[in-house]
Length: 303
Image (cartoon, rainbow, N blue to C red; front, side, top):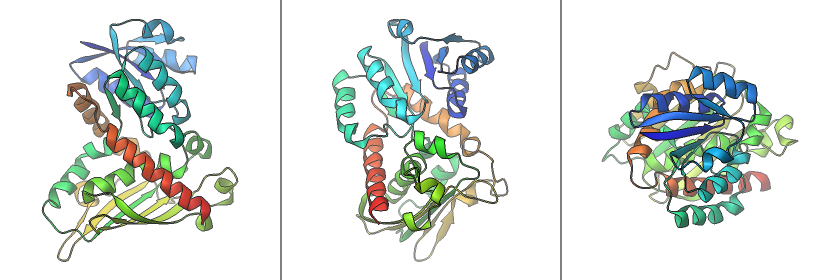
């Protein structure tokens, strides 16, 4: 039995707590959050122990797996601390907010020989797996991705790296995964269509991104923090004689109030895959995606 601890008990952290309870190989032993009241509440809900200080359980060699689902601006601190104690880490995306420190952190991870996973759970979403299976061996011309959030909190966006890191991370990764290639050219329009509220804080509310992948597939992405009809997430793929949409494989009538509900099962499947794996999972893909996000942010900031 792999004893574990979840750090950060927001909606996603609680989904991970639920997943750990469902995986036969794991037990949820501890939870930790800076909000002590929340921590006690979640510990009671999942029948585990709330801790106010991580240090004692870090020294416990029986606690082998830690899930980091705290705000992205805390990830570097926790990753370094967990590496020191040789703990296996499942880290929610993005890995860091400071891309300049990314290579240094990756070197530490690989040198320590711990297992590390970047939570690119959308790859495990049933609708996207079905979509990928549909396009197998087909000549793709265009991939269109739209993601609009309803009532998104600006401060939450900032803590998680802003529009391109917080929202864009999954969709840049999905574009490369579905297109089986990496970007060679990128165009970003963001500053001119973003709201003053976001721009004043150094973030963006909206973006239109055009990518040309190395295999010449065109990717068109629309990101927005504004939606009047609820959260919208859709991927369409076009070829000369076909069109497939993620809506074909999901309940498109149900505009979820929370993206994490729509893709809830994917968190479980991604975590289970990592636990069953003997090696890192999606670490290299996470690094590549983070650098794509960083490039998109630079283009948005200078145009």
